[in-house]
Length: 121
Length: 110
Image (cartoon, rainbow over all chains, first blue to last red):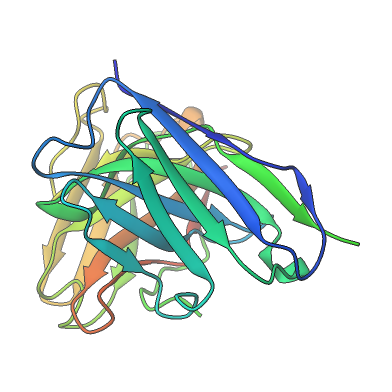
């Protein structure tokens, strides 16, 4: 059974750096074609893709956020970490991680349960 | 503003057929697979249709997908109250080298 779970702080202050961890099971990020991605959703709004890391350590970032994002993996721990710098109240959202297959980079299955991050002083 | 355009809302009565559209361009829908997601309030999205028209195991046959040129559609047949949810389309964009989502469609079963 494939599962993913997001973890991180529920509250961050403006200008701080957010660090989120996606811990997964049921697959390996060393397997050819396997990727993990991050997506967020502000309250009441649409989904927004953030970043992706591939089995071969290739990385892709949202064009609008790439200067603030860093994605990395620890295959020994089955974890993917996303950091976002200079947090702003507009970054308040539920952050999801999901597994994807390289053949189809927008096929996210399954998703984690999500973690709500609020940016406020 | 989303690069993929969806109607913000759709509705139908039980038993009806409802179509949700997703409009893009050659750099996204026109050249890449479209995937659809269903999201109930307070829950994470779930893959509903992949590669334009295929249903994952466990998804009802009442859901179907199609694509033509730079537009895709999700069709829900035999509408049921349990279908009331938000629906999102997604595709890779070759120019942006990003995944892009539609703005989402809220389906109401009257």
